Length: 381
View 1: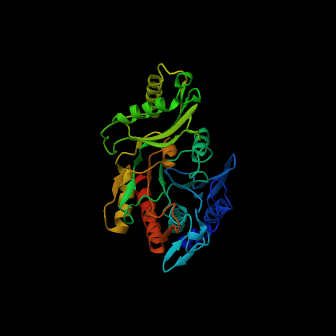
View 2: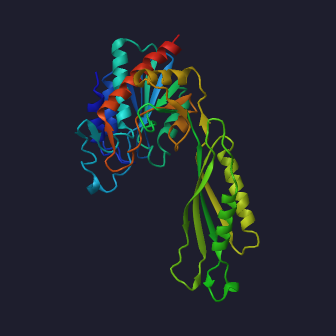
View 3: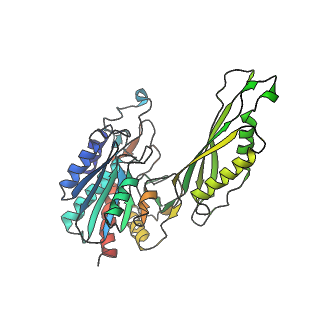
């Protein structure tokens, strides 16, 4: 058997700040191998990934998660060492306690219980990456591509992200908005402020473009989704002199979008607006988009009900099915199968003194145990 708290502590004590693994994947692999999982490491670039499977029959229920964590920030501000995994008055403190080493440990412990009880009438699998908090180019995305090539079948997936909002079990994520980052660079002609006719100031062009983009109401929402929003995240004019018209101005923005849009359509719209803003300008306006993921939804049905029923049985309350929040690796896994996300309360993730009550980690294990049992009851032949 596996103790979820002990395994969480062992993982926290591995300082796996993206892209470092620091032995965290070894800890996961050892725990799963001990349960009889067939484990495969998939290394892409400098990123360690793991795919492990128990059983060969269908249906295959997969758990997806990540061992990498964000930097600790101001280490001196922590009440305990960020990687000490200290347990103080029933609360586990450490980077990854919430996001999301505890969820990996809880699902592993739940698998141990299910295997011991003989309740696995199909297969259980784990898709664990070390590149979720980073650029995510060598993590789950590439593992999914490799599994597709191998024709590995995953029927349904649960991602262990900290989805609970105010209290444990109040929310399940059944979809996510898409995300696109855009970098805009306006190149003009540098010159003296007293002789503007000899220069081409890029700043007014950039400001005009940003104003045009922000003026548009993207939409009023979409069934199950909140409205799309465009946020300017950076404006930069590399100029330290007061009497010089700059030669370059840059900006960055992000759009979180619902299924009214696709990343490609939004990129085309911004490019069109950039062209219009640059008409008559003696310079260039360059737009570089990066689509992080498209909007998706796992429609309510038998799978979401199995997950909701497991939460309801442990907490006594019905969880909200939500598409709010940022992106996650679910955006890649949806190419393989229906996917939902469920985990701890996320209020302290990425913060100093990230922490999780031990009792809630035990509750999470209990939800996962019921989820596994309910899943094979509902979907096994």
